[in-house]
Length: 180
Image 1 (cartoon, rainbow, N blue to C red):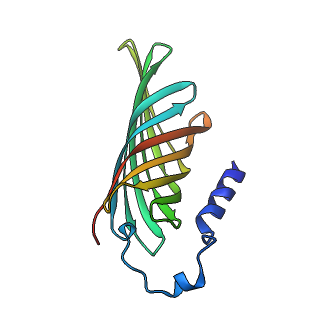
Image 2: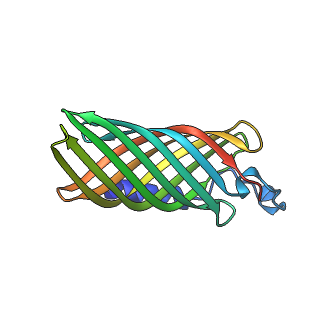
Image 3: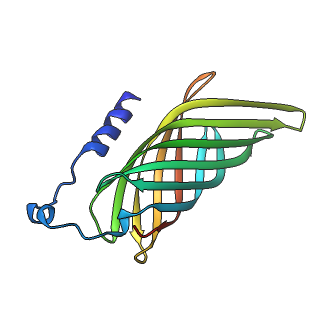
């Protein structure tokens, strides 16, 4: 688990290779990535042995040229072994953008929590809240100056009553970039 956090920190803090001195010296033109963006995605979460489907909504706000403040909310549901499951994840953190006009890769690190509920035959119900974070990466494919197709993968590391749980989450959807 430490290796995952270390690799995530290296990814977020590294300077994009290939940025020439001439490109850095030019005054930056306003890019579509300079304003706030909002995305909505279909999301798949593997929580333990259960496969949960749902939606992910995220917003990011520019801090610096390639750094963004990120808020993320996702809701997933499904069933496993006769139980109906629901998991709500709420996280915030930083996103690091890397160069590219048509393809814009990014890495992100978030902290937050998750609330999970399970019901069995409307008789037994349980709910718990776990805390932790997520490391992820993704890419935006620019469709127009304001719209992009976004694909991303995150690795959620959450601490529940029973210990640590690591769950992969994959999302694909659309992102809209507001003018600055």
